[in-house]
Image (tube, rainbow, N blue to C red):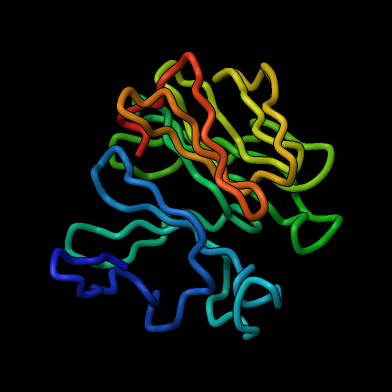
Length: 208
């Protein structure tokens, strides 16, 4: 949804091919200036996250809202797509597969996709896999490092997938975003709190 200047709410997307979406989860502005969002089933399959219902969609997808307002399916290659983030140059898209949040045997991996000149996505490739929990929200800094909200806090990865370190949080981190006047403050949602952490790097302006 979009809140207008007068306070009115405009619905941007609530269905695909005439059927209701599952439960939109995370959204980012893409390098094309359009909104991309994930649509797992957490909000209709987990009692503490929404209202129980059977999925109307045949798959869990990542969508893009075209300039015309049409909702376009970009990929259904992710079991339970959750967080997403673009690299600073817009040519790489990271998506969290949080299948383990529903099934202990499900995926707990961050996938990476090449983004073509036509904004179409290449095949999914594993970028980083977790030992426990499931990856959630994602953000990218100006140097292209990926910051991932995880069960044990915020994990930081080099663009090649090397795990650089972790910022521990008292409860599982579920989302994060760069902000502040210089883009060097990291906001992290963890449990019932929002943590603000001043860091030495800034978020990628073009990463949404």
